[in-house]
View 1 (tube, helix red, strand yellow):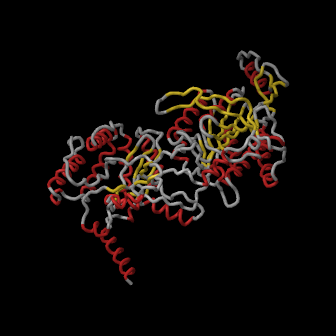
View 2 (view 1 turned 90 degrees about the horizontal axis):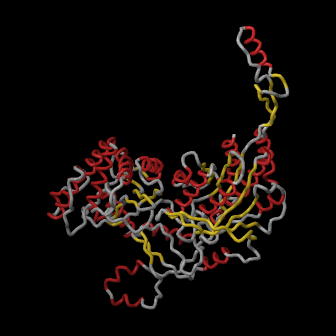
View 3 (view 1 turned 90 degrees about the vertical axis):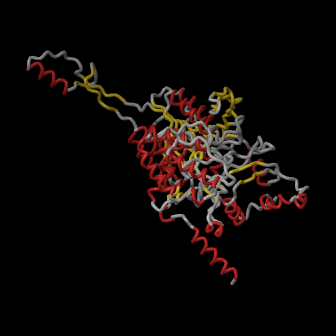
Length: 612
């Protein structure tokens, strides 16, 4: 009974204190595409990802209803760093949905302004506001409409203590007259968050991976059942794993008691899904997520064994490896001979036939692609040829009868073969993430394997010159380049055997693989040369090849490919590809397959559309 009454009381005070407008809420997921395009259109850094901001405790004065309901302690404010633009996961501040949407667009526009980050917070935001309103006058009316609605929700200076009232008055003036305030008065208590401005002290970037202290690689994400549903990023910090020998010292330090529950060395079993779900829910409520590495995880040890097979089980290397450069976007320099790419061929590959379940689809594709096979055509108006061009002869006779001089040239027609002057290299991602299940019955690697089979069958029907390679990586010194079919190889049983033998492993250092594929494709004499990339995710590796660094190196490699006269195109099954592929391949340079199981049939059709 006591628990029941407590629940009713909690619901009552929470409802009374709730100032949000759920019916007018706008979520980041529904406006993310618009915000990303808007940000880049206003001159924002095209390489930034878009993500939900971490909620933080603001410490400002709250009303008695909020204190009673223990609500309003946390706030989501926008901010950005060198890799990510972070916006609130949901805006339900105003009763009008259009205002909540306009607030997203304003925060996006404000983040696109190029302002000195060393300026004081209140000066920096006023400067960004003035710059945005000056460059884009169409935003002026929306901005002042937002300011008017926001000021109605803020506490009046007359209801605050003197010091806090001075702060609030300065903020209000800065919002209404950007550029008029040069300093924020001090007060003992923090000021109310200004939701139209960026975060005054953004959390620590949590996007960096925790590197392995013992050199063991970490497992690349291979399934999505435990991925958080929201886009929120957490503030993070790294720490050394405590040895547990001095835990009782906390009994003698009163100030440590408040942090007793912040860090508990617990060995969580990895096979209990309930624990993982509860941990994910608990993580959503944490201000700062502290990560340590103890080196005792059995999964990491198992992954180490899987990632480094014995020489007898590994593919056979061809040659001594190829040194390749890599682009460092932070230093804006190309690092020569920074990576080493090794070409491999599978020794376990045995000649085989096309899998039975694909034969019917392959026959249909071959019949469709035979329409692209070049045929013999007649060229008219030739100086010499197999037959007289009757149309040209009639025109000449008509000219003579009318008294017009006819030179008698181009009186023949000739029959010639029009060949498709095209070469294609298909580069398939074979990283460990392809070990995830794309459906209830097939993994991503199985879908990629079927796609390679059907793609080869289709191109064999056209006679186009093509090659197929797979790639993965284990840091910059071991970029693996698996040869499935070179330009000089025939598509036969052995090539099918190599496709059948592909297996997932390692990570995704795209830049080096694209550079090597570009070099092979650029050496072909064909006029049209298509570089087709097949992947399920963004670039990543164990070292610093993560986030913005990997994206920018891949973008530079694609730029180099275009300079060599190649046409790069990406086919992906990554649901978040729209966040980074426009920056890499440009508009119209990629295709997202929504259902991975459709990839084997869609890939050849995409090729036909691009080369028709």
